[in-house]
Image (tube, rainbow, N blue to C red; front, side, top):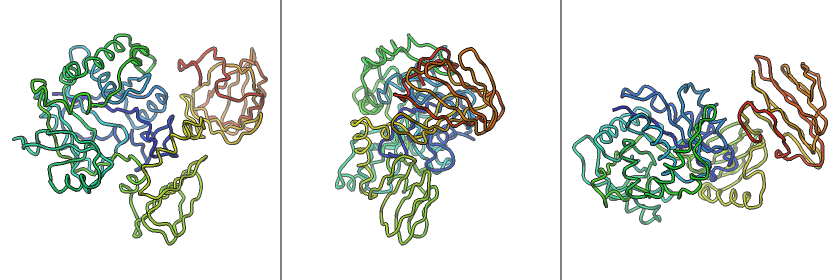
Amino acid sequence: MTIRTVILSGGSGTRLWPASRETYPKQLLPLTGEHSLLQETAARLDGFTGELDPRLLVVSNEEYRFITAEQLRRSGVRQARIVLEPAGRNTAPALTLAALEASGEGADPVLLVMPADHAIGDLAVFQRAIAAGARQAESGALVCFGVVPERAETGYGYVRAGAAIADGEARALAEFVEKPDAGAAARYIASGAYFWNSGIFMFRASVWLEALSHFRPDIDEACRTAWAGRSTDADFLRVERAAFEKCPADSIDYAVMEKLRRAPQLGAGVLIPLAAGWSDVGAWDALWAVSARDADGNATRGDAILHDSRDTLVYAGHRLVAAVGCQDMVVAETADAVLVVPRNRAQDVKQVAERLKAEGRSQGRNHRKNFRPWGWYDALDGGERFQVKRIVVEPGASLSLQLHYHRAEHWIVVRGTARVQRNDDIFFLGENESTYIPIGAMHRLSNPGRLPLEIIEVQSGSYLGEDDIVRFEDDYGRARD
């Protein structure tokens, strides 16, 4: 039986603010190494000896589709199918879209379903667990992976194991349990029957679709309607927006897995124990727990100096961060925000992100550095009637042909060669050369060279918002940047 890998990459990771933002969430960040969590997830079965379909299936949020595709390309994934959700509806609808795609042309693979934002320390152990899960899923079981708990954790959901199954360490799946209080968590650990819910699942595509149609026909119908109206957009597969927006939101756990005992004819629930150094990297305290630490228990990323400090995490994104006399703290710095929080209050960071969103502040949604399909820009400075950006355009890439009603732009080439279209004129600029784009002028910036093009853009005008764009042509099919 062929295994088809499905990566669910639609979360926002608000408890890891300010590193994780709505438009650039934690799965796109290199939190545990040099590669992003998404890239690490895509490589998790490298060297696996079972039969794998090389066509990776990724379900992603529409908003960060380009950086998702670029990260997969840079990590060597050449056959990725990226299905775009026009709206977040939790994991059950996302998985259903993937199952419908995987079922094309009469196929019925075993789906290995993984969130994009988890960390696994021991890949050999992980792959052995996947092989055991595949054997169960091939026979029609719906498989979850329960993490062997290291402590009485109140931040995770739990799964309870039932009787052992003849095949290795597999157990019957008895029940899913909500996040417990401290006393209940301690009792779960003492019993030896409870595992952390990893959010990783395996089952045949047809088995999932049949179970969903039985337990949640409303989700099944909405997803099938949205799928029927799908279209292909470059490297992406888009489902019909209006139909999918009507789909109820629910998780894989709630929609199907915890209800299996009611309908045993749909397939047995099976639990595979997993002791592979798993973490959901859900908050700053979890990142500290999976990070390398010095003799004083401190973990750092970036340019950090700690003095007389213990059990502290310092995440320095853009500048030197020094911590003196800190104990059990988290200090996280990005270009536009700084977070200081006790490690045992790390779960409360979500409240800050929600407040920023409610107040409409950009720090809750965007980083100062914004990625685009043509490259990226960094908003260096700004004030009333002006803004300064550093813009990098990848080789062969081009911004859209556009105009602005409220701002003029000055471009100065720092590195590379720029091809500039300004109304009917087309000309080239080299390093240390500049040009001016007046208000209302149709213009386009392209990089015809083999090296990245870097420019400084100075905007001036009465309104500088990114929605002041009238687009005429775009290589990436966007309505706006």
